[in-house]
Image (cartoon, rainbow, N blue to C red):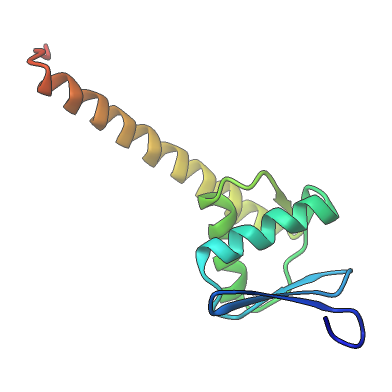
Length: 114
């Protein structure tokens, strides 16, 4: 903890800074740390979050929200639209993978597809 009360969490090579009003994530934070930061921010600040950072940072956090299935929305309309678009693509990809897996398991059991 710093003199001003900021708490710094070190997670491997990454760091999260919590000043009580916001979280700061290290620039090159891993996907897991980004998901953790979003999850904790949701608990603290609610379901609608605001991202501050360059476009690469925002894109990484949006991807983390989708990949980690963090149930949040973004205050910025562009970020929220991108999150919705990626979520839909993620859901469709998962559905195709599950269908392929189901078909593959059927073939392993000697089932015939017609």
